[in-house]
Image (cartoon, rainbow, N blue to C red):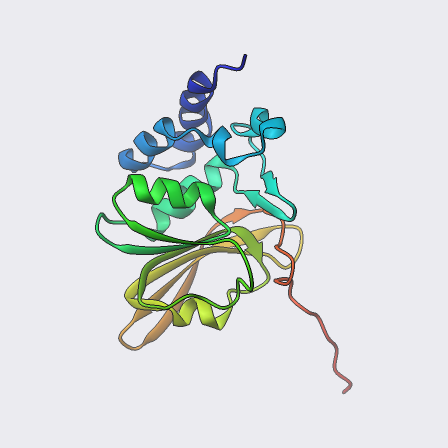
Length: 190
């Protein structure tokens, strides 16, 4: 029988904290949540490995380091409204931090239920964040997503301000790009 409690502690101490995740609230939430419960039973042993673990066909949990860094970068605060897109583990962490979370796992993930979210997070890679995602942000709302168009992606934070949407890259990550979210490359004749 695997000692998942020890694995959770080790995950936080060896993968999350050394990666500049300094928010103690995140440490506490990640130590408490059974990450293995977000994976099929036959893949539970992968929950604390330094990999993107597939929980459904074409869907993976971000590496523990990456989800910790992404959540810290969106600066979640208790009482905020969040949307978790293909992000079951991140959703649970946000709930543990006191946010109200809407989960979106099925259907067209590029179209969102409602809007005015303080935090939107996605655990799957996308070529580029869809306009519907940034459009669903409340004023001062933050979107955390990994944009990937090649071997290495960039975790990006989008922020809605009064004068529009800003974007900054915060770290490198390599999650698989979700089906339907790859960048379509074209060419032009000159």
